[in-house]
Length: 314
Image (cartoon, rainbow, N blue to C red):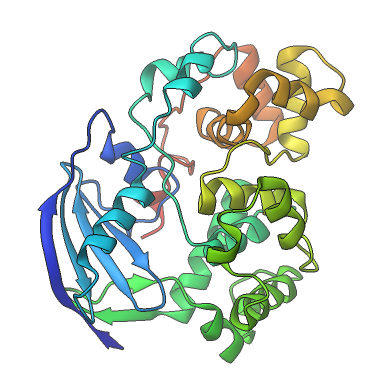
């Protein structure tokens, strides 16, 4: 277990970003309690930040020589410097996302490491929202990677942790997906897949590299573009979203991706993510019912959803 010391404290300029929404959506209770979030700034070193919804933070690491870099990385993860005005301008007149645009304008996607974004994508393969995020929860809990600071917060496992104990993936309920996660871990550890080398490349090039890993398809690769790189021009579109696009925009399902990219352009991937939030990631039949009844913003009725997950899985 690593012992960390406080390197720096301060408050970030949030601008119009709502950190409460940013920290809450698609998160667990052990990383957000409604008032304060734990953000993994660097999984390997490790570096973590405790940050309140008002923007005040404390950053902990084993060494403090890179404090300015850590703060910049924290701001990147929270998206506080990202200009999404173009996306919200398009969304304000869109029949599917205009209500979300009006009520959730302060939200920003919270970024993750490339490794963890790929694991998220794999766990969502052929799984419901609840199934996929329950798998991820089990993975974090079973590997139980802790750091020695405050109440010893838990971190996601690293690729090396997975390679040392791959059987825990099966225990976590990942089933056949465990083989893909192991292959991803090997690719990350060997340097075959490296974030720094990929970051400056185009979305198409990054997708091509990631898809070389057996079991990683377009959906998982493109979700990683959104979560790890903040590249939104290639949308992750699964069968769920394809059907929704066909119904909302009255096009054939085979034309869904082309329609989506034509409508959203450089924001296509972000729009895909937002759609899951707006419809509470409901199964397709219920999502279509929501669309027909005009219920196009998250509804907090106590059931698991991207906005309530942190209150349910702790």
